[in-house]
Length: 355
Image (cartoon, rainbow, N blue to C red; front, top):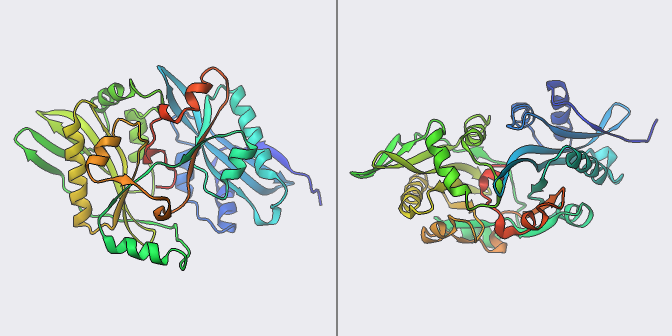
């Protein structure tokens, strides 16, 4: 048998994605074909970066990144989010992951992608930060709002006894169509994101040097087109004008019922919009008997103080459901200093590929 491996850029057709899915399934991880199609066929960059290590016709390892549209200063540029990596159990110990990554990164640089970023877990982080020239930013910026104190006693005392289960299911309930705050202010379900949201995002983004471009096209792709997920989307209207949005999810996960604030975006000068949106979601979480709420927000983000005033605090390491690290590798020197400074970034659960 030929023991050599060939590194190839794969197609994103259904046949290739089914091989991708089966490789993960064989190695104990479920991937849904519709989700792979959404990621690799329907992303907003209209391209894919799927790389396979092949031994003859056998799929031995996979490394993929999601092409995303980034904002760097005032420019809109292509970038990559590192998502899936796996080596088949029969082919481990061959150094396939760094070979795949280096091929993907070399091609990305030639194709003018600005950077690759992601959230390696504690098992994969050494490979990214020590072997692949990623710049570490520390752990993912978890914020937490506890709602059920007994849940935390159980997590603290049982953490070393029970292996963590990272599987999840959507918690779906008949959410209200609208909630009136006062005569001038109402929170309503958002069926889609339009030019009114784009006006808010444009204002917010003026003061964010580095982030995924969260325009209406992105938000509709991320929160409406994504299969097998359920997100609650609301906008706050003051005197008839959209002033901010919030997206959240509720999942049975980590041994409890967990709320996730996926994104909170509002005119930075309108702090009351954020206050009302967070109050509304907290009411919904309590009605659904959510155990705790998680969000991601870096200390320098425009919405960080709004979270803190609403009862969110930085999640202590021992309570974190898993170790996730934020990191980036720029592909050219032009904006390297800007990109490798965590203070320039905006991150939220929108950046997560698992929620």
